Image 1 (cartoon, rainbow, N blue to C red):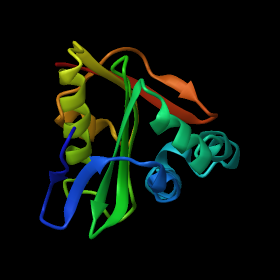
Image 2 (cartoon, rainbow, N blue to C red; image 1 turned 30 degrees about the vertical axis):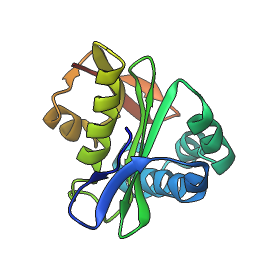
Image 3 (cartoon, helix red, strand yellow; image 1 turned 90 degrees about the vertical axis):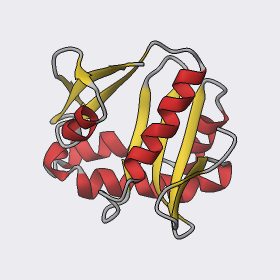
Length: 164
């Protein structure tokens, strides 16, 4: 991805940099805490486990890893979304800030990740969705790819894949 993807004039998707670590991690943490409440059911142990590796120094290592492709979505110049694709075809992160859903940020992030996957010649994308995000991924063309699994305590995830 050599260029930014412009969305609705004030919103864009661009490659992540180390300077995005703090705001990007805050997006992920707030999205999990607020938007995924139905998934973690406000279970403190589940939240603690889910958030344990969501730290700026780890984010910096994730974007520095050559196997990862990471983008951020901005609204009015502020990071409001994050996506990370591993070279294996696994979408490992796709989070939007509370209050910024349904603005095209998630679709823009996904478009950038999918475009990169296609440029690598990957046959499909894979991910594990929360219950909350299933409709979003299904609207993007993902299909169920296995039985639900337990993660981090009470959290349930659902394997999905999308042929490219």
